[in-house]
Amino acid sequence: MGIILKQILLVIIAIVVIAAIATYFLILKKQDLKGFCGWSTYGKCTTDKDCIKSGCSGEVCQSRFEEPVITPCQYKECYNPEKYNVKCKCINNKCQWAP
Image (cartoon, rainbow, N blue to C red):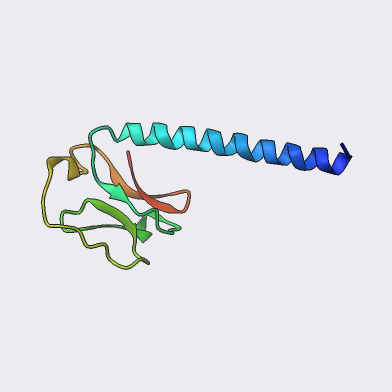
């Protein structure tokens, strides 16, 4: 194998490892929200002020730059962010529920 091919292979391996680690931590982060059933659009943001709650029951965390999300008007206790101590935040430039 040529040197360039080996370097390309190492870069690809590094990318795969980083993606696996990132996925692992995202899964762990979701477990922190155990019981909370709201959802996120992962819309673009730069600060927490760019992220808003939407949906009829406030169960969606989305970017203020996105079109409003329309959801059925049914309330579930698991939509209550205060009960589960979560907030709609900007994390890694994506709006999402987080502790």
